[in-house]
Length: 292
Length: 123
Image (cartoon, rainbow over all chains, first blue to last red; front, side):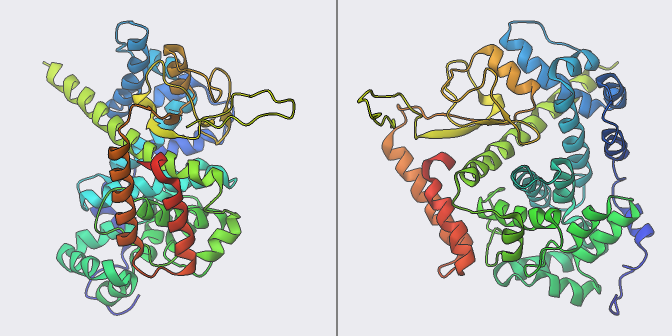
């Protein structure tokens, strides 16, 4: 850490200023190592979480309405209808999205993190990388920026705006805070006991000259792809460099038929996620209104 | 636009449509026709009831949701106005120029050209 007027070396204190890391995601990751995990166990995990339960119910009721059936109100029955894979996807995405959307950072930060998670996951499915790890590493890739929002939002925003055209955000962050968001994000990941390769992917996602692992490569290129696809639409999206070693490590060709499908899926899934979040929020809001 | 080549015996075989559009699964409607392989959570192609060329039903939509499929490609509605589509493609081209800049590196240009070639499937 360079000389800095900010307390960036006290990660535990910084982590306390951020929203609590979603334990439900860590529990889920532990569970997923057990191949025999049942839907009942998963449903128990999400039962007391109104937002996740709302999303599970929203998806199940979408199906029931096609059958002209009445809406379900029981999360377990809803989870049984949509299946274990859908429940798993909802837990990871809602848990992580809620953490990123915890009141810090800009609307762009939240949507960008979500878009990179999707793009990383789509690339992962093409390249034999764990989709769940790719989603988590993708959504957390810029988590270090949340610390800068806490420490000095004005200084960070100025640095960010100045870096849109020349892409020198890392250097500006280091000059202001003594560390860049990749370094501080990796320290946070370590503090939360996230898997080593997730930590490594966060640390090196801005390094365009190396590919340290397939996970790092998909996150690095996932960010490039999200910006190239303009999701979320923003003047902040620029692509001036591409990590060529990462392209080579993953063995991808941008002009292949699979990649054409990957582009379309990223865009459609981004829209799907935004619509689902809206639907889940509406359900949760309605539940609150019904309470005495 | 249909791609219907002739086999050596002269018989015309129905083949896949070349124009498609990606949609969030929540926007899938019965009657739409699946245009590209449906991919599930793990990247595995889901073929049961969801083969390319098959029409979507209420039951298919349930299958999509159960399998955690968040998006599908469907045959593009031929009723879409060509002029509207052309304008949409023009806007995307314009954004690509802003995102990549006037003189992208060779590596960037490969991605930019691939996105450009995707044309209406991304609009």
